[in-house]
Image (cartoon, rainbow, N blue to C red):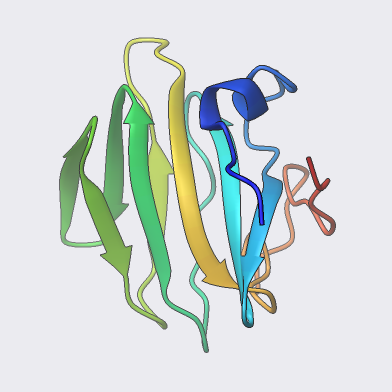
Length: 121
């Protein structure tokens, strides 16, 4: 039961699209990630995801629209909804994510960017 300094944790890694677990809450994990460019279209059949933008602007693409998520805002992607997070103008965006421990990085999609294990920092 210690406080977690998010800025300090973010300083421990630099790779984009490589989530790091900073805490667990029941069957949920709290993840930090740095995003830059475009991810991969995917969905999670059984899990919702919550993204909180710590720094920058996240563009959450859905098949019918794009939601702009600014610094200090959150977006919840419901289970089963196909989405593709991305950034623009070569900006690196920092996000805090809340998701079930069972959530696969790229859902049912296998991609060169897919991570199967999140380092704990």
